[in-house]
Image 1 (cartoon, rainbow, N blue to C red):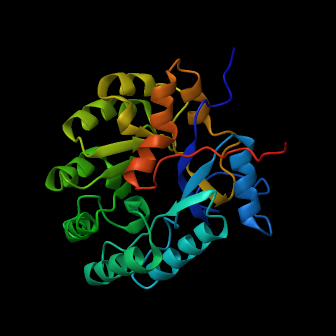
Image 2: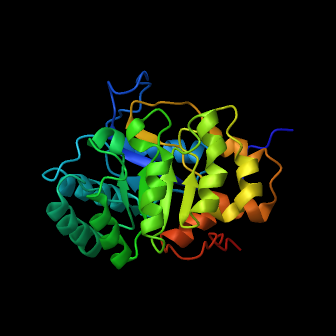
Amino acid sequence: MITTEAPCEVIDVHHHVAEIEGLVGARNTGTRAADPVDARIAYLDAHGIAGAIISPSSVGVHSTTAPRLNDQAAAYRDLAPDRFLAALGTVDPLDVDAALTEIDRAVTELDVRGFTWHHHFQGTVINDPRMEPLFARLQEHRVPAFVHILAESFLEEPWRLQVLADKFPELDIVALDGFSSGPQAGQMPELARRCPNITFDTGVCISVAHGLDRFIDAVGPERLVFGSDFYSAPRMFALPFPLYELLNLGLDTDTLTKVLGGNIRTLLRLGSYEPAVPADVG
């Protein structure tokens, strides 16, 4: 029998507040609604997802646009804080001075809980030396870095992230899209063993040869979080495949509790999950 309901809280760590029309071969299936918040919450509800972590756009990030993108992500979070549990920020790695200023502002004024980069769209490699002062500042603020390692991108090859992870062993890093090809998915357990400060999400997880169960067997459930890579528009998928795959791998409840929600709560300091108490109707 196929399992479709989680025995625990589910948090989707990979939600972009952005449109990506023209950059992917997806057809708009109606997610560009008058109120995109309604469409996003409907998606969460349809799949039993309690909350999402909101990220700004990966496209069009420059030193002049990053503050506005971060403001948008934080404002979107505040529209439904019971469902959008935290916002991440982003900065332009090509302008270090502006990026450091914006990291300080976004953490202290917007309460962002981490910063995300998609170097494939930002014009440089992950291990560009200009990333080092940015990682150092995140380490000072004790907020994690979320870094895309999309399999098809030369700029985002996993070994490049390992270089930075080795230089900043005390910084928590979340590798996004690590299971986006069969060959790359096979590398993820070894990268996890080499870099204990990296956690991995399930965004862009392919439907074969992803090895999520083997990854958990190799490095434990504490190193994996659920993410679906949801964009505001267009809708790029009908189902959050990794969620249903995880629910049907035969994993025990403790493992699912960590992977589907507990690990990201720890990383972003969101506090413990407290189930809603039913109202007394007696």
